Amino acid sequence: MDLQLQGKKAIVSGGSRGIGRAIAFQLAREGADVAIGARSDGPLQETVKEIAAATGRKIVGHTVNTLDLDSIKAFVKQSADDLGGADIVINSAARVGGAAGDIEAIDEAEILRDFEEKAIGYLRVAREAIPYMKQNGWGRIINISGLAGRRPGTAMSGAARNASTVAMTKAWANALGKYGINVVAIYPGQTVTEATFTRLEEQARAQNTTVEALKADMDKNHLLGHVTTAEDIGYVAAFLCSPLAVGITGEAISVSGGQGEDIHY
Image (spheres, rainbow, N blue to C red):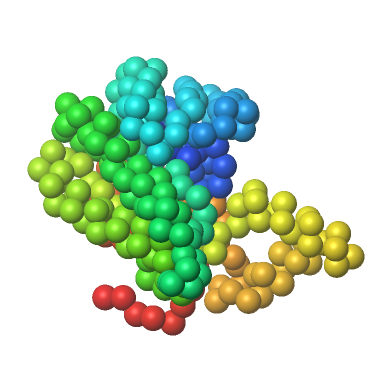
């Protein structure tokens, strides 16, 4: 399938590792030019070089702190200047997890930090990029949420920031549809990323086994016999960015391999 992304210009926050990296890679494979933002410049530039070499697309990288409004403004402007505009925004810059524990003892500052980094950080990135999309009369915004928004456990900030991300997604979709801008959230569940294999390597040494054996055990415990990978999410995100996905906006789509037994309708 031709996703019709050739020549599109994408901005990906949190794109040096994990889900953001996988999405940036897949967009480039589909012919998009991509600006990647991340907090640490070293891993960021390594990712830029790798994606550019593999795809032949224009890939640029800029450091960004999504807790800092001025940093976000500079990141989006530099990215749009480098690419010649912005058609797509992928919001993926946030810590995994979040504040959890006893409601009577939890640190409010940590919850506020989590919320500002993710929900407000996403808002700020999107807000800076929307004028470019309006000029084109077309755009896509993909917000990476998380299943804690549906199944919080004790992850208080994870639940709040992920649920609020989805609520904002719907509100943005309602407001921006008239400009040809679609907005969609993705719910990842347990996802295999580079960090997963680092952790498995440590476990393998401690347990005198192999990474492959530990990964096989993980797969066995999942509905499809396959733990969702960052690349799996990248494929879905690339489709949602496509002109072919014009009929999908304001939705939260789970890409979790069927985790959980609850029903959403």
